[in-house]
Image (cartoon, rainbow, N blue to C red; front, side, top):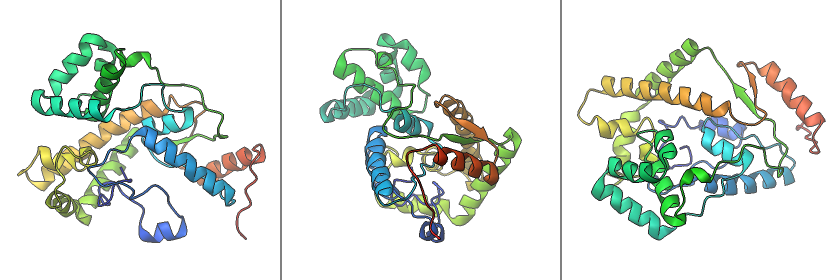
Length: 274
């Protein structure tokens, strides 16, 4: 979601100072009403990694969005490409018939996918219907790849914290975002014409303002906190399935030794600036 312009506070984008010290790529490249698919991410990330390696820099792919990370590491699934015409028809059906009607359509042909897709995950539900209508086959037959692709050498590291510590950090982060003006940021996006149907504004930290319009900010903050905790739990499950992932605590020394060992066995030799 950091790819979307104007969504700075709610996505915890890196500060200008941090970006000056550590250049970031693929941030602020889409408007909130534009789709940003996993396929888009893989294509753009591949190009950025190639550019960085050519310049003698080690690419670091950072994030918590397990679906996009898995597609980058393993390669996109073999599902048929999105058709603008079918996508438009699915969007129209969503508007006219509602979410549950589309879920029922998917469940009739592919119960496994209908069960697996979270109730509020409009993007994955509509994408599953696009695949169903384009191919005539159940989306579940286009199984995601589980082995790392050979385009790159990967060191996959996950940072794990005790559950209560993670919950406390989430609560602190949500409070800091509200203090920094998340409500005002949302109001500016809404005034610019972006509504609840915009892909960017379906993100946690934004959609709650639409769903709870008129409610006290404290209640909205609590909803954001709850949804973030639930999301973190789902993401940990997703990330554990990444091939070759090594779990560590928030330990810079341990991370440093892993990277050093990785580079010593890699074809790429990274020489940090003096």
